[in-house]
Image (cartoon, rainbow, N blue to C red; front, top):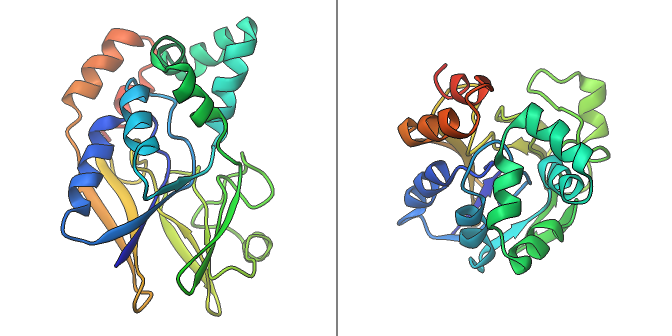
Length: 231
C-alpha cells in the first residue's frame, strides 16, 4: 500500500485531477496534505469537495487558508490580498457553502499522526512558523530546527520538492500540485510504500490552457498567475 503526500494545490482542479489519475492502480490508502488547498486559482469548490469527501485525506491549513479567513472578516484585507494574489478568495466567498467553508477554515495548522509503523508530523512552512520558507538549499542549522522525533516531517509552502535526512528521520517537501515552481505545468507529489518505506517523487503533467484562459478572464493584470505555468 502507498501513502500519498501532497501540498499547495491552490484551487487548481486540473492539476489535482491529474494527480488523482496517477494514483490509479497504486493502492493509495492515505493522502496527507500540507496545506494551501486554495489561493491563486479558480476552482476552490471542486478541490474542496473532492478532498473533504475522500476518507483517505488528512490535511492541515496553509497560509492561504488563513488569508481567506482574513478576507472574510475585513474588507481592507480582502482588497489587499485580491490585489496581490488575485480573485481566488472572492471565488471562495461566492462559491463555497457554509459547510465547505467551515471544513476548510477548521483545518489544523499542524498534525502529528501515526500510520501503521510510521510517524508523521505535517506542517506548512516550518515546524514553528506557517509562513517560513524552507528551501532545498536550507542551511544545516535551520535544517536541524525542523527535524523532530517523527519518522517523516512533511513541509510545503515553497513549491519546491526536496528530501533531507538526519539518520532515519526524514524531512520531505512534496513540491506543489497546483503551481509547481521548479518545473512548470508538472504537478509534484510523493508516494511512500508502507511495506518497505521506499520514497518516490512523482511528476504528473497537467494541461494549462483552461487555467491560462481563466487567469486572463479573472486577473488579467496579475501576469504571474499565467507566466509561472509557462516557464
